[in-house]
Length: 264
Length: 268
Image 1 (cartoon, each protein chain N blue to C red):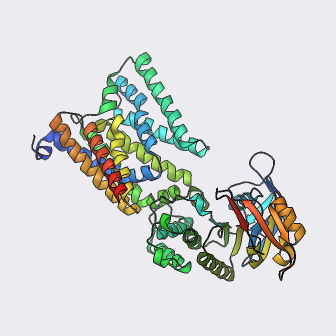
Image 2: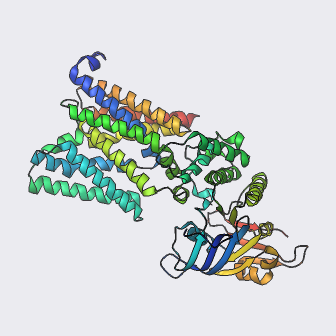
Image 3: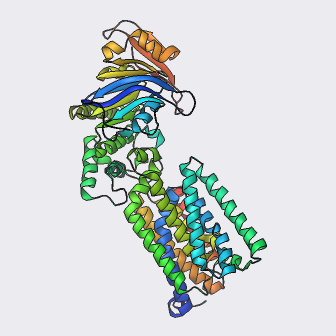
């Protein structure tokens, strides 16, 4: 994270290249996101989605270029990265978001607890607020982490594959919260490997080691872009009401084996 | 079989009882974080790492408490720094422990030709605890309690999701260092009574047992406190009865409680 972006933009990335010591794993990235816009970040595993997020979070300094984000972004990691045996409730997880307001050396105050309860209500988890995090379903866990991001009240939210492996009810709930956040003027960047779900976003950013395309889904999701983004991991199907349809075939990086995404 | 009332009536036992209650309070509250942050090895190592400090104190007449405190805090700082530099925490803990122990052995055998500190360091004693020891344990218990109340949510968030917590803007290095330092202080305070070999009996076993049974952090801390206090007091009574240092009975009771808890959980 660095200085305030240009006026009107919540996120601006200019000529970004970033990596982990060796050659950059992501380069030639240029895009801007306005407050109230949602962006679906598409790309294969290893395409640079997580690297982009780490650069936006300020954890990874750009090799070249500039990254500007207004405020400290909220980050929702994949639930596989959290400890499921950990003795915290959904409410405890939501309350962790208040650590972003400073005061990490003091116990939570009443307004912070109220904000956590309100965030759980917003993601439809009030009934499960006292449940241990590890006993929640995958979708409920994702919603608890989303509630943590809501408590943080950040102008920019980065979500790492929030819809991956989520039950349909949770996916609907999460989609509804995304719409609300957009209406509130927050910028959302959501990584996904589901090409079809990208059509519901304002903008699509396709990455495959470099930026392949950035723009509204109708313009960005053409056959050439998808092939450049996914290469052999994708089968493109022509026709249908939405024009080009795509099915990506990927090996999920967290060991769930072979998955097919999208529909035809 | 001696009367349990002796624990309160006999002055030297009264002091030992107070010491173990204070250590139980420190161990119960810090133990929860030790278990959740996977610091059991660090806890054990922080005590053993004080060896060179005790050797120097023994040879020079300097306060053993202050010498071991200085070494333990330095050790905690070293482990935190190594962790921040991306070292695997267990490896950093082991590497720095070996360095401290080797330094202690060289000092004891070649520089000061002294081995007097070793017995006290390893086993502890219920006899000969003095006011300073009690004061150190009271300070450790107070710091552990304050730390838990103030920083508990941050330590919990860090253990649950370190990357997510860093992304919230929490200075994770500082939060880690405070926890490691509090554990080091508490371990140093416990050495005179239980010795370094069995310090984990007070700081790890009660919380590990509570962890098996408790589903939330509040109940985990409460159960760890109760177990640490019960284990400490009952262990002291057994030590008095069987004429042992208090460390071994406290450790055996802790291990029995842990085995019972895992059996109960397995049967559920």
